[in-house]
Length: 168
Image 1 (cartoon, rainbow, N blue to C red):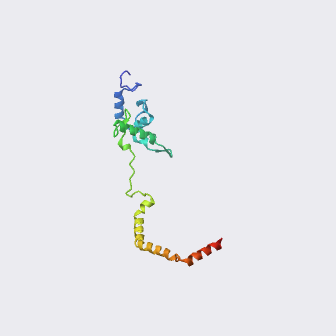
Image 2 (spheres, rainbow, N blue to C red):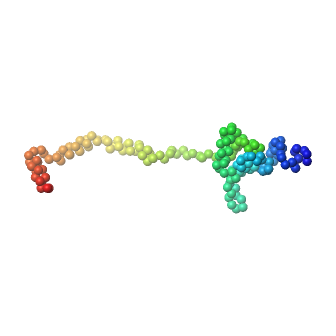
Image 3 (tube, rainbow, N blue to C red):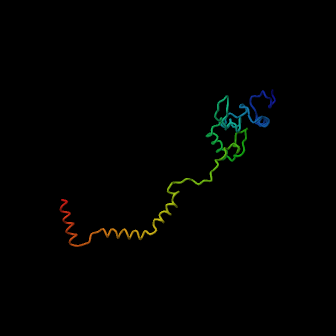
């Protein structure tokens, strides 16, 4: 019982902790992890990638042991610390790159944009087609307005004055 590596000892040394990790399966015993680690990191040390995935237990789906927000925080800390890509289950430092969710597959299709932007070329073609012969149409319109005007003279003036007096 006095030997430092004896299983009856309550406190494990760093050396025994690393040898236990290397010899054990991916799941680690909870009592071997340091107590000061956040629960998300402890669960990642214990279960690895399985902690990030939901699981089907007793006919029901259970949520992931490490929620998405907590895993994102651990991942960002690993990137800032420079330990992204590796994970050390003894210290809980880092983030394994295989744990990342696969990125969204982007579509080749262009964004929809607004209707006026989508139809811009069609409208330009339509306007150009309508502008053909517009000078002639404008001159015809102005001429029709002039044709509608009564001829100047005393007779026209007298008729307009007489029509004005009847309305009152």
